[in-house]
Length: 340
Image (cartoon, rainbow, N blue to C red; front, top):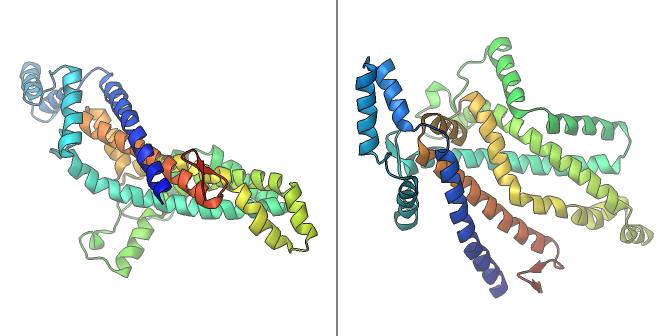
């Protein structure tokens, strides 16, 4: 237990300078393109406020002064990162006109829930289908699953999302796309009917994001299991009289699954980006549209904060994958020492 606590402490401490470096790079890249939120203010003053070009420029100039957009880039970064470290304050969203933390609270929870749902389904289905394909090598089942895997790895998610939208909207005449609930359930308390309504609205996002992850898990599991099934210790297990099912599930699968367990370190950000792509197409109020919208208008703090969240999920995912590998195989070393 002490060894585990030491390992977690060292990983957390080593992640701090990495996050600091990522925050600098992220903030700099976001600020690199020309223009800022003042340009959006000027455009809105002209298009909606009917202001002249000079009046709009004066409004934008005053807005930049009031919100510190004229401050040097290092000063803006220091103000942002200091607020996060000292007050857990991610800044103020210029576009949403509310604290960035409120924007994150509104969107991050539902995004993580969707991503985790997709990840669990992709892992269970992908590993199961990979085992089926490997144990039926060169059969019609293996060929069919290979085609499914190839499609999942090659078809872009946004294209699948567009196809589903076309079918739902123009062929099946489905209404209220682009929301989590129907209008009658929007403010209603949670119930079984509301949950069913939620599933009816988010299943395309879950399906598309799961399909890509499922394909990867299936291919990796099939290839690894085929290699393991030819290993000497598997032949020894068969020679002892164990059933084929016991040989596969007790001896082959635990060793073949190692690369997929290590892959869990990057899969959560991968599933988040997969959900983000599809959510943008469907217009759901999750992290994806918030990132794209904030980048489009120059709402820097929203973009930078969400990008940092993705970085944190990557680090957490790697720690979890290390712990899973140790739990799966005692021979794996934890913190430089063999696990007892």
